[in-house]
Image (cartoon, rainbow, N blue to C red; front, top):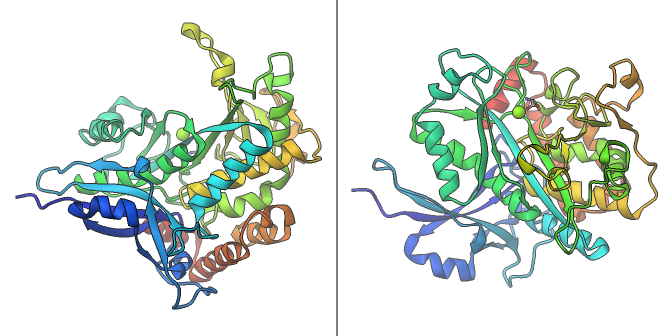
Length: 430
Ligand code: GLU
Ligand code: MG
């Protein structure tokens, strides 16, 4: 007999790991109303499970307050019990928001954008991952697609059933690599789905006796696993505002300002969006991850890519038009990633930034030789984060200090090991 399901109340931490607590299904209503207990120092847990130095220590208490709109049901399967997974905000015991809650960080960024500009974000996070122990198959091949059945079809059905709106399920280029993309959705919904989709993939793989990894690289010479973040903006009527066919590359002047903020703060943003010691092995040229800090039309080496649109079948270019932020990966917290991108874009809209160069699709590597480079490693990105007073100012001081402490503890944990060992250490965790 399959045991009764439970309700798992979850958050995503600074290592991009889902953590939380479960209660019996019969307590669902009470838990939705009152939440479950949580501990401030949990924010300081590193990817490897240690607790980094933190200001919270052994005292203090929080609530994980579930947001019922995020509930997904994972049905029972072959004796393996079902579970309800629900995402939560971290609050103080009286229910007021906790200043260090990553989900609250995203929500407030979206609210501030809305208040200052009237604009709403539509976003989508694309996840690449690798599955262990498969027979060799070719990039993008039907053979690879079929080689993991019925996992693939079950994954699409699971995501559809959970309301995550899967868009593409594809065999990717790299060895044993796949990609799952979801339909664009309102900003916070998209970030919630990014938190959920990784765990739904991982859990289904477990049920099939398989292991997947979303680590930025499984091997230094292999393909990277990115989490590309697609962003567009809508006005109060729902009309898309990034597109202006009369301007270069069709990027509206508002879109140019939004992009300028992201480009200007990119070195600091990376400490949030690519926050693991292995992230920077992926962020090197010729990997189609991001080879430098630039904005370009339809170029997969760009930090910000202006994505293609199509008029086939009556497609509306303005509705499809979006910017893709490429130097992010699954070691990042999706709420913080969305939050910093929105805040950087908002800074660009409201502040004084130079208009960005929009490199055309035909740009050559020689022409790009002078564009600013990405931080060479996590330590450098963290230095940028702390030094960029605009970016650092978006965070509660305890949140940014804990983030830096967690990341420096992760760097210390892998110091002295070579890149092969580093990639495999991260692949074990992610
Ligand atoms: N795997 C590449 C990355 O690390 C992306 C390839 C693609 O454009 O889908 O970001
Ligand atoms: Mg891809």
